Image (cartoon, rainbow, N blue to C red):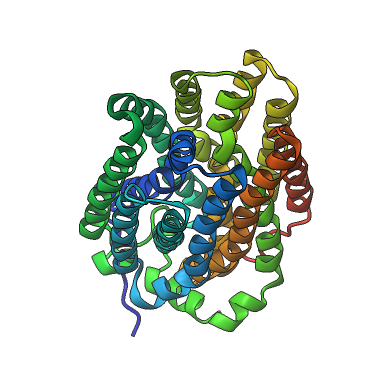
Length: 419
């Protein structure tokens, strides 16, 4: 017998709590764990005597760790529940970030960065895939767009906080930076464990904006009927996954070497580079919400194509217009689109396979995204050592982003939009 769930009597729906906590989880899992590296990198590189290739390997190791769990994290979350997996993974992130600050050399740092990546994959994929279960198709882009704003908040936090920690603690400032950010992630992990819920059905609710005449349990069963094998055999999911590679490869070059490039080649101070990094964060706060909503209206593929085009322009300007005006315009363009693509991809996964199977589909797509992320910094570091400039790497990122935009236009809409 089908169990009929109900909408709350008032206007408030617990799905909005899920959305906010998801945003804070992204802040810790990606923002602090990954983007904190951008601001800490110059001092950490000097203290440990790392080459540019080694800094690229550290970034690549983090993304390989992310890839290792992200590829199966969606399946694990679908089986055991996102809430439990997210809490465990956030704890792993916080502990290994603190240990990164205690590293005495390249090999130790690499170990902890890889394990931090594992935790990031085990947190970010399940939390982004949680939202399609809580929000119906016509609100998925909005919800995932708000969630990815956690990365924007992290840019503001690391851009303003890390330079001050570095100045306050001198040569050990990079170690204190990792410790403080790691402690914050542990706090956010505790919050996620307390407030997240796996499904609206657990609280007697339908997804936000779902049809009032369709019981949520009916939708759940229809999604489950798709089956695991059909998710991985879906041509639509494969095409989406290949498009996602371009974002992983291109954006990570930009964010990893943003501060390093400005300080080493544009002669920016730590504070000036940090302020521009924080500005990206401020500008990007609403980018996911804006582009997620746009994709709700015009379709996922056109939303993705527009975002990729603007990012390609941003990366090219960073390399070619070597003037504070050029760097600022580049930062603004990137900020306007920064975290939109993961949100749109998460929403598209829900459209293609339904909320119940969205974690598996997003985990599969993230496998390809992770391949791009792992290779991007390594290629950029090698190019820098070979050419003595990061400009060729940023131009490469622009070209790959442009290819991602072209690939997005080849995506097909779902045959039936899953609620």
